[in-house]
Every structure is written in structure tokens, then in C-alpha cells.
Image (cartoon, rainbow, N blue to C red):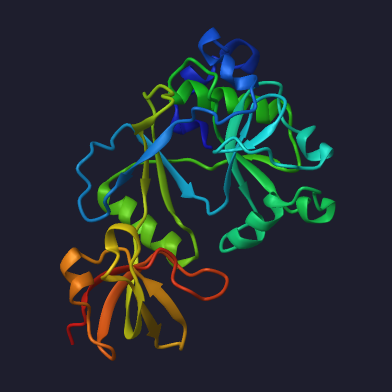
Length: 291
């Protein structure tokens, strides 16, 4: 991060040893259970109604969120990640969180690697732990960021890096960046309130902005609903112009489920990129196609 994003005078608060504090309220940091991490609110790309002037933003990496409690590396759900010892030895003595990441479009490969009980030493050499916050720090986000910057500067590691931050300038600039990044394969944007404190809950001090793409597909079948949707359509089986078949259930109203589009009808759906198998990710029904 360019230190001009946070004033140089404030940056002189300097060493991580003096800026990092671990208050007693974060005793959870050394227990292997689901960590009470800060969760992001969703920012609607079509209706940005939040004052973002105090925010910094970074690419939303399509990886696996990791929490290091000082002894163990855990998933967001608190499940242990069996990383090689040499990888864990690169991490600090205090709690940090970030994204385990292989690169854009490689989530499936990373997910498979993280789930292994016996770590693949060779493949883990490619993984980067992209740090973005300090759950045990009592300061504002800018304080926490400086602490992270100082630690990384004083303790350079091959596999541990900082998420790159940018300063918010305008909604138009932010949306232009989102469009550019997503066209290059990024998942979206994360926004951090510079004055925000760490909350172990969903908070507007942490926002996620994910645009979407839309396309058309032909309905080729129906899948039955379950539970409250028993007796009606649970999802549509559709096929896109590439010949790829997939399910679209999200976005269907009760009326759509009771009276679904005809077999052979063309629908418009929206999605967030493609999986490594070429299927639309998070496909959502929008409407019947309007030529």
C-alpha cells in the first residue's frame, strides 16, 4: 500500500510491537472453534447508497478465507487447515486473517488443496496468504493496516503478503474498477472503512461489491422442489449457447415455480463469472428473454 493513502505523520506511529494490542476480549483467538470474525455487508452495484469517502478498497480475491489464531490456521467455520509446517512457520505470533489464494479463477484448485488432510508440499508452495486484517487489534482499520504493514516490512515472507489497498475516489471510478477487474477474472471488490473498528459480526465497516454478468439460456427441463417448494418447480434446467447445462433456482418467485417458463423458452439469467468447469457461478433467474 502506498503510505500516502494514510498520512505519513500517522504512519510514523511505526512498529508493530507498539501498535499491536491484544485485549482480553479476544481470548477466542487461541481456541480452535468457529472464530467470531467480521463479516461483510453486501453493497448493491445498482444502488450505492453508502458514503464511501472514508473507505479503502481491494480486490475481492476468489480464495479461501483463513484465520490464524497464533497457533492454528482455520477456515471461517473454524475447521483446521492442514498446511505444511514451513508455511505455518511464516505466520506471526498474533492473530491475523486473510485469503488463501492461488490466483484468479483458481478457486476450485485451492479449495481441493485446503481440504486435504495430508498437505501437498509442492502445491502449497504456490499458495499465498493475503493478509487484510487483525482481529485482535483494538484500533481503527487504518491502525490495524499500519500494524500489518510494519510486521510484513520487518518480517518478509515468501508466501505471506498484504492485500493491496486503493483509496476510494468516486462511485463512478469504483464501478469502472469493478468492471475492469471482473473482465480480468476478479470476483469483486472489498471496501474497508478507514475509521471502522473490528466487529465480530456483519458490519458496514466491511462491504463487498460484486457486479454481475447476464446471458440467455434455453429451458430444457425442470427439477422438483423440496421442503416448502414440494409440488412445484425447485429449479430450471437450462442450456446456454456453449451447450453447457446447469440449474437456475435462485431468483424464481412462487408464481414462477408454480407456472415456470415453457420447455424451449429462453430466459435471461445473471451470474458471477464461471467455474473451472465452465458453468455460470451463482446463476440467478432474471426474467423471460426480451428480444
